[in-house]
Every structure is written in structure tokens, then in C-alpha cells.
Image (tube, rainbow, N blue to C red; front, side, top):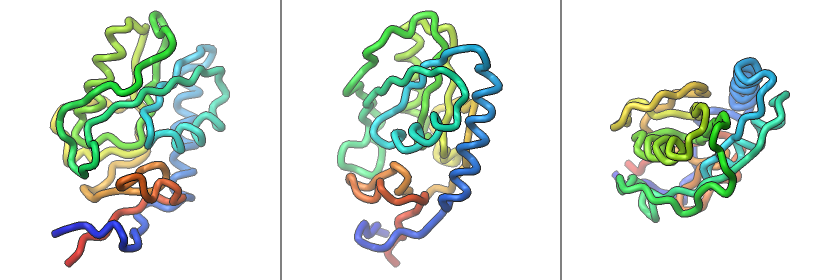
Amino acid sequence: MAMDSQAEPGVLINRREIEVAVCRLAEQINKDYHGRKPVLVAVLKGAFVFLADLIRHLDLQVEVEFVCLSSYGQDRESSGEVKVVQGLCIDVKGRDVIIIEDIIDTGLTTDFLMNYLNKQEPSSVKVCALTSKSSRRQIPVNIDYLGFDVPDKFLVGYGLDCDEKFRQLPDICFIKEEQ
């Protein structure tokens, strides 16, 4: 079955549910990092919307950094080969780092990023993901802060895209498969 990226996406998680989850995750991070200044490393492009909402609820001093990794290209399936397109611009040695991800699918990208960051010798690295497709996991990934476990559907909205389309949707939606 082919996916029709022109079809109207169906809502999987609405904006209110997302807001509640973001507040819950921020509360957990505030508690765990009280008195500390973690570096939030957001994975571009998809995590920028989640990051923007999350930091508004943090009562911590944080530093924000971005990395851009590639494993998809123009395809909807991961190639399995992850590349650093844009690496860290700051030194995280001896710092607490929290990876901010929009979605963890196979685990390949997150595992790659964990290894990349650990080579920088941070004092800790934790993972905060808005969504996780645990049913598709190929490599085990420990998610310290998780919003939602989602079904194996192609998701868009709230930063997630399909060939750069649908990122602006306020809900997390799925692209309906053609019958």
C-alpha cells in the first residue's frame, strides 16, 4: 500500500494531549536537574517545535544546542546509515546533556547520537523524546523522559514531516494509507 502525502492526515495525538505531556516532561526534568544547568541537544529538524514548547516550561537555566543528523534522505524508511550533517558547536565535556528528540523509531539515530555525545565526555547523557515507536526498535534505547508510545504509522505534524510537508500542524497526525 502506498501512502498519499496529498491526503488529509488523521489526528493521532491532539494539541491538548501534547501540551499536557510537554508539561509533565518539563516537571520531571525540573525535578531531576534542580540547581543544575543542563545542555539540551535538539535533533534537527523535527525536534525544534517540541524543544521550543519544552523550554518554556523549564524552571532551569539551560543551554540549547542543535545537531543535524541524516538517515532518511528523501525516503520514508531509514537507510540505517546515520551521518552527522551539523555537529556540536559547544563543549559538553563534564556537562549534563539531555537529547531532545521528536520521535525515536528504530533506535539507530539515537544510538548513534549517544555514542557521538559520549565521545565528548559529558558527565551524563539522558534522552527526552516526545514519541517512540517501540514496535519498530532495532537497537535498544533507554528513554528517560517519554511523552507517548505511538503505533507504527507514518507521523507528521508538531515538527514531524513528510518530505518537508506538514511540520506546521499543531497536532501529531498520521498519513493515511491508500486502500
